[in-house]
Amino acid sequence: MNARKYVIADIEATGLGVDKEIIEVALITFQEGKVTDVYQTLVNPLVGLSAFVSDLTQISKRELNEAPKFYEVAEAIMHRLDGATLVSHNIDFDYELLKKKFAELDKSLELKTFCTLKMSQELIPGLKSYSLDSLCKFFEIKNKDRHRALGDAEAALELFKELQNLRLPKRAKIYFLPHHEKDLKKISSRAGLLYFKNEEGRVIRLETAFNMEKKARELLEVCLDNKQLLTECSKVEAEATGSALIAEFKKDRFTPVHFKWIVTVEVKHYGRKFFAIKKFSPELQGWSYKDEASALAKLKELIRLMPKPQFAYREGAPSKEEVLAHNGVVDKLLKDVILPAENLVIFGEGRSMGEKSFILVRGGDVVGFGHTEHEMEDVFLSPEKYITGRPTQKIMARNQVIQYLRVLKNLRHKTESWRELARSNN
Image 1 (tube, rainbow, N blue to C red):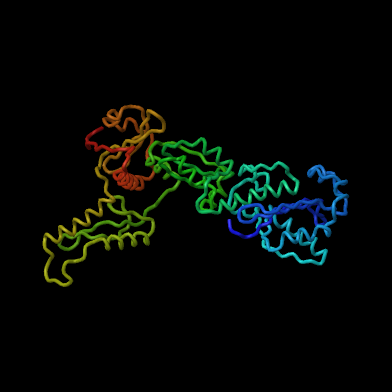
Image 2: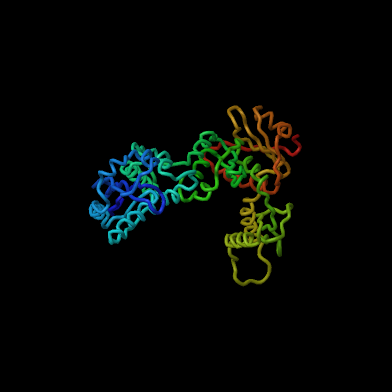
C-alpha cells in the first residue's frame, strides 16, 4: 500500500431515483496502511422518507429532522476529500450524489476514484453476484451494521484492502469461486480427465492431468490469467483414469485431429539420410502436423541440429565413415518419434486403491487399454483379455505413447512402467 490518501465513502439516500437525497454520510480516511480519520453524520434531506428506507436503514424521520442540513456539513466533508482518492462500492452512485449536492452550493468536486464493485468484477471474474454482501461473504468480511453508512464503509474498506492484495503477484491466500469450491472438494488427486462446463452443461474445455485436483485448482484459482475460464465455467467434473495417458486417449474422442503433413526421413545419394516434408501417411515415421507451417518449422529445427559438412568443396563421394556418422545423427533424432518396442504393455496406477491401469501396444499401434485388479503377470500373459477401451485416433495415440515414454524415462519417481511383449504373445 502506498502513501496515497484514500477516503472510503458510503452514502445512504432516500432512494435510487434522480430525486434522491442524502440521509447519511460516512468517510474513513486510509493512508499508509492505517485508518487516520473516521467521520459519520446523518443529514436532513428536507424531504420525506419512505417506510421502506426507514426499515432498511433503521433511521427514523425524527432523527433526520434533528440532523444537520447538507450545507452545514459540506465543509467538513470537503476537507476530508481534499487531495484524496474516493473509494466506494458502486462509485457512480456515491460520487455523483456528492457532486450534485456540492453543485447546489456552487462548489465543484473533482476527485480520483476507485470503485470496489468494478475492481471486483475485474479481479474476480465469474462470481455470481458482486453485491457488497456477496463480496463480504467471499472474503469472509464481517459487516455488523449493514445498510448504515459507517458499517458499509468499514466493510468497503476491508474489501478495498483485499482487492489490493489480490492485485499483488504473490498472494498470501488463494481464492476460488464458491460454486467451484464445491466441485473441487469432490475431485480426486489421481490422474484423469477434467470437464469444464458452462451453465448449459456444455463442455467448454478439457484437460488431462497427473493430479486432477491440483490441475483443477491451478486453472480455477481466482486470478487474471484464468479470467476467461472463470467467466465461462459454471461446473467442473472429473473422470479418474489412473493413467494420464489413458486420459489423453479419452480426450481425443472430443478433439479429433487430422494430420496433413509429416517430417520424415529419406535416403538419397550415397546412402545418406535426410529429413524431408511429405504428405501425411500413417506408414511413415516422423513428426506429424496439421499445418505445413509447423512442419516447416520442425524441418528447419532438425536441419540446424545436423552436423555441418566436413568439407565446403569436394570431389567424389563422401567416405563410408562420413555417411555412417551423418546417418547416426539422423537416427538419434528420429528416436524421438519411434517406440522403444513394437509390442509392449504400459502399466500404471488405477482409479482407486488396489486397481492398476494398462495400455497395450501391438505392432507399433495402440490397440487398447483397461483397468483391472488382477496381477500384472496375468495381464502381461494375456493383455487383450483385459481391454475395456480403445483409442479413437490411432496415430494420435501412438504419438502420445512415444512422448509419454520419453517423459516417463526422465521421471525421478516413476508411478508407471512398461514391459516388452513377444510378437507371438496372445
